Amino acid sequence: MAAATLAGDAADPAAGLSVHAGQPRTPIGLVACLVAAGLVMAGVGVAGLLTTRQHTPAARPAALTAPLPAPTGRIAAPPQPADSRPVATPVWLTIPVIGVNTTLIRLGLAASGVLQVPSSTSVAGWYTGSPRPGAIGPAVIAGHIDSRTGPGVFYRLASLRKGNKVYVRRADGTLAVFRVTRTETYLKSSFPTRAVYDPAPDPELRLITCGGTFDAALGTYLSNVIVYAVEA
Image 1 (cartoon, rainbow, N blue to C red):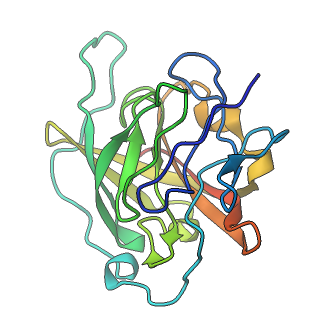
Image 2 (image 1 turned 90 degrees about the vertical axis):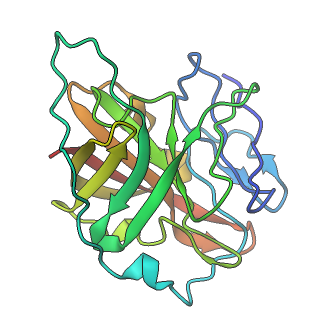
């Protein structure tokens, strides 16, 4: 199965996401790339979200470190099997314990089969080929860890622990509330494609960013951080 080409990132044109060209609109994995060269690595299986070239762990903005109050609003009821109405689209993400409070943009697939990335490191994006948060199945939200100018929206994602709450506000004003079950770090060459994208019997959430060791020679992180969450 051939790997798709690499999508650029407005924050750093050499960074981005790419996917294997599998089933239409459904990535079976994310491919690591050599950011410095701007090329997809030949022979690599599946990996994950890429980041920008330079890790700058200093100067954490208060918005990324100060805990936030939980958002208020009507909690969405779990979907019923007989209810054919679509779940409203996600528009906002709040993770109080790590100070994340961001609009959600939409991430699709480019014509070449490449998964798009957020154009800014300060926002996260919902992959529209995955279920809407609160619908049956694993909704996928991705964001950058940092850039050459400082921390990104998911800078502290790896610090999430079992039981932490994640809130997704939807276009109809309802909140989908999720509870973290685990946070894992994987080498990009061992990205857990099936665990992230395979169907699930209940509403679930996957939050993805880069992490682990930053390889200055390659200009990229060597791992991905993935947070798994279920509807609370």
